[in-house]
Image (tube, rainbow, N blue to C red; front, side, top):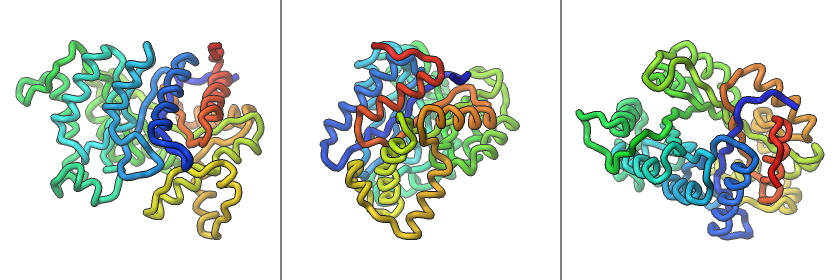
Length: 334
């Protein structure tokens, strides 16, 4: 058993090659409900567009559904990609979510479009939406509108409280901004592990106390695939590697089955790419995951830990969450 900080979940509403988006969203709902039973603190969904393997293209809509189908777990975005949206729309959506589910909504904001330029242009309908240069000002507009700043437009409905606002990042840019404005920071260790230490140091060194935080508050998101044996864990992780390869090639596809993934042969370049990606992932049996988590937590000292994975089968995805919860001393509910 490890002494872990509070645990949370990031889910991509993964669409498998042999199922519909309806089934993918049902699986995400089932995963959120089980995470709540297990004692996970937060359940976040990501924003991706024009990707056949990911159904979470509208986080605010999905968050409303997940919050309505759970009762206590915090539900939020990991994240809303601000270059795709006007600040007022984001403030209105999350103000409404906070009004519907007081004290349970998180707004995680990122500065990458999370898609190709053509899709990003279709979302924002202006070339300015493709640039991250205006991100700090637009992010602060969202914060101010949610806080009821009288100098700006009023985001309606106005909730009695505010959603908990996080800055997300995979480099030190958002880390420094989060520190300067005194907000919590979540780092994407699951796909940018080489930048983790630098970004966390930048956040902590730049942190200025604010009305929201007196001291830095860090969450890292790690890719964790846990199964009864290391061989089974590697087998479960393989479809996710193929999905990531297809996305990086510019030809994203739905996630292949474990059996299909096992038959896929990789080129020398693909093998090297996967090996690099796997270095930042935690894959293995419970004993192996315990060791890897101890090392990661000792190195990064986060206040919270978020885990994610891309596992084809929903039962295996849930079992992975259960095994990690057990390692952290949380007893699985019946």
